[in-house]
Length: 365
Ligand SMILES: NC(=O)c1ccc[n+]([C@@H]2O[C@H](COP(=O)([O-])OP(=O)(O)OC[C@H]3O[C@@H](n4cnc5c(N)ncnc54)[C@H](O)[C@@H]3O)[C@@H](O)[C@H]2O)c1
Ligand SMILES: O=C(O)C(=O)C[C@@H](O)[C@H](O)[C@H](O)COP(=O)(O)O
Ligand SMILES: [Zn+2]
Image: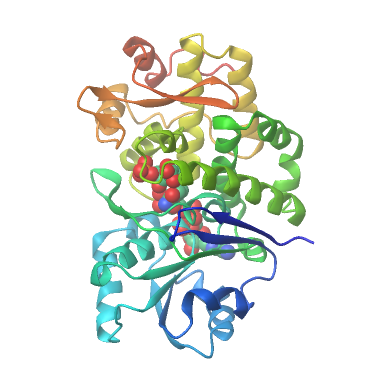
């Protein structure tokens, strides 16, 4: 079985995405990206004790440095980013170096942004170790940090040279984090792949039980969807915004609750349920679709309602900084069907208020 390799096609910045068990120790996979370079492997204090040695042993013939960041969404900040620059300068890393991001989406986003900025841009490799990072954050080149007033507000587009998603690393992930990753998997089904959504309805238990074959299938199908969208619209001038389904509500929840209280995937899950609710209020999908979406999210161990502590006015305030806000208003990603999302500014503000203030039928099932 079971290793899969996809290619994200972006001309001379194209790169492979390797998916499967046992990949961390395969030196040959890294070599094209790091041959002859200084390499800094950056991780955090949870992931480094688990996997840093395996990666460094695979790279033992290289000039290696290790750097360990504090673990948590609350550390996805400019301040912690600066510690990466300190380490690179102290170790005299030059422009031909390569950074390796070993961890979940937080490490990946920060190391990617450090690579985008250091000496105006150096190479980096993504080694995602959470399901969420393997299906989403390691692919596509969105990098950055949070600001107290808004999620991912400081960042850059900077593509990795290689993505190496070793599914064995998922064995040490706790159940809550696995579920958070499944939220982004469900997102792909909702935005443009109804058949995948139906596969998820039938196979969600296999994913929750960490069946390797099911995981590789879901990761590959998710990455294929994301890679096609990014190849068509790298910098989100159009279609890429579909990947933001659930995120305008979700980012508001993350910022409003304080980073790290709700996991990103949990906030996105509640946000997708809210997007489905708002779509149904317009008659674009029907209530049975909403119930199906909520049922799958629940079965995956995910929330389907926003926290009670955020009023609809506060939601609107938090949502106003969304990157899809234009001078003429905020665009939202909503649903015409399961498997057909759309980006639209043409929604009813009264309906939006009903969704934000959780008026029935939001709590239908
Ligand atoms: N760039 C993008 O396109 C993109 C896409 C989606 C999400 N994101 C960002 O990704 C972040 C969320 O990523 P995440 O869900 O991976 O969270 P995370 O990076 O915080 O990782 C979750 C937790 O799991 C731990 N962990 C990681 N791998 C582990 C393993 N194999 N075994 C045990 N523990 C492990 C981490 O240390 C952390 O405590 C958010 O900041 C979000 O904004 C970015
Ligand atoms: O890759 C994308 O494009 C996405 O929107 C993927 C999202 O899952 C991810 O959370 C991303 O970081 C959100 O980007 P943002 O531009 O809304 O901050
Ligand atoms: Zn996301």
